[in-house]
Length: 176
Image (cartoon, rainbow, N blue to C red; front, side, top):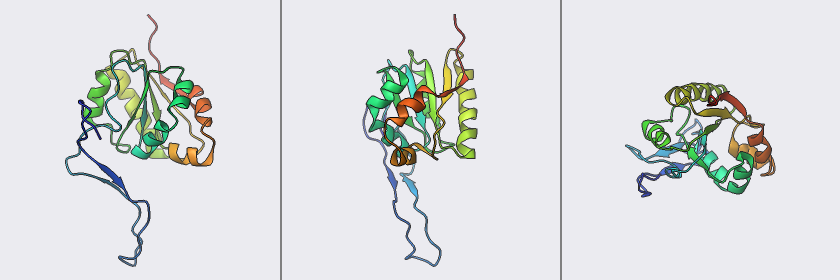
């Protein structure tokens, strides 16, 4: 994860296998962060960002970064950035401050998991962000699978053009 100057200030690790060798109870794959984590993944968005995609997990943000041209096409702009939250309770102060510093930001697109926690977090954060900036539009993508990474594994990359173009709006800016 990077700070405002683009320097790496923290790391994220994810186990990819379950380990049953240490006990009779299977240990599930886990996410690991350094103590006192800071920074944003993949980094702070550019000041000219018009659309910002928030993902629930780092692996989902990394998945979207692999198909950046498709994401740009689906959002109808080159000025789209991606930020990973650290779970459904992970839209922290550092990310909120980074969002507030985007003078050209028009829309935040949530790509959280399709489970109950992901849907509730989307509504909660959309309301929070719309209250802070009433000119901001918030929307969400309805994924056909649980998350972005799983959707990319089970479908062609081009599905994201359609999913982004058909996103659902939560709070829309008032036209002046």
